[in-house]
Length: 466
Ligand code: ADQ
Image (cartoon, rainbow, N blue to C red; front, side, top):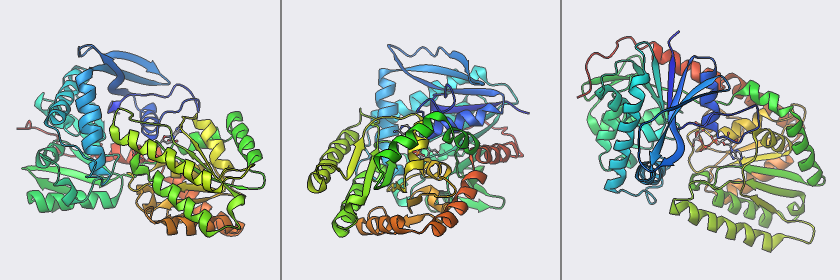
């Protein structure tokens, strides 16, 4: 079997079962590598006074990681800049927040070159290279420039937006052209894949060929939808762990006469937190008789604090949760509990299990693994109900959830009411279908389908990118 080289912006391997609070992408990549011999390459998260290209190698939990430090200008222009201030808002349909700064574009190209040059000596002829996410779109092009002829695949974890949105990005053609230096490009959903195909047809007069291939810029590229999942067996194990049980018991004791509604997200404008709070506010206003029977717990650790839009949303959420609590709270009860910290994965598992409703309402989301974790954590005999945004990639698989438009306070309010009054039989019926999907289409299935599709690419590259 070929070696697998996984490349992502941050390399953040888990250190032990359920103990850490690493995000969904890190868990998925660690799981992807565990069964393949290979390397996980990327940024250490550290800033050096000057970029040296020196690689730190270490082995943790069966995974070999190779990391490099970046310098301050890289961090500001590539990471905070083009990745988080330009591409992230664009991919999440927030062109009002997207900043187009020439220095960001230059920093983005520079770091992608640095990644390619540092990675190059580690690549052996039979390796399969798998590049992840919007930070590293041009990495394939840079590797080709250095003469790498290996199979290289790219997976986009965030949505590929509609054609007209992509066209608002300066140098969008160049960015899309660089995707054609890969052998395989994967998206989370068929909808994202179609949006990409539409862009290629409309903007660069590309052709759709048979066998899931596209032709443009004088090259052929294989494309596909590969919905990411959670590590279902691992999650089933941590749900039964002592920490998970303890958290479950604590939260159950706190909500003895109430139903717990839970939200767990990074604090990000794409996650629809303001709209969610307003939906809950509407629920409280419309259902005076149910008010004291619920508690909404929103866990939202701050992220990307160096970006202004994140500071602003944080301030707005503080004000909104305070306003709602001020309006409805009583001496012994607050409707919203809003917590800005990280929790261990085993604690989150226990929290999900104690909840009657999982409220997952992003405005846009590539997939959303919290929705899947919530399902995996439920008690089969008395499961909670998932209320899920129709704009999360997960909605394409988790059809038995209560699907809502996250922009509509009325729809969120009505879905909450329905979820809270749903009888046990219907809850069990819906949950079984959801659980079957989460277990079957898990992270192993995702990894294998992508790696097999990449390994299947027949023709190896002979020509270098121009
Ligand atoms: P994210 O935007 O980070 O991921 P998501 O898929 O929900 O979103 O993953 C978040 C992960 O972080 C989950 O595993 C969750 O348990 C964890 N997490 C969230 N809040 C936490 C907290 N307070 N403490 C500890 N852990 C917490 C991006 C894309 C998604 C896509 C994934 C994977 O934006 O759309 O699903 O990558 O492809």
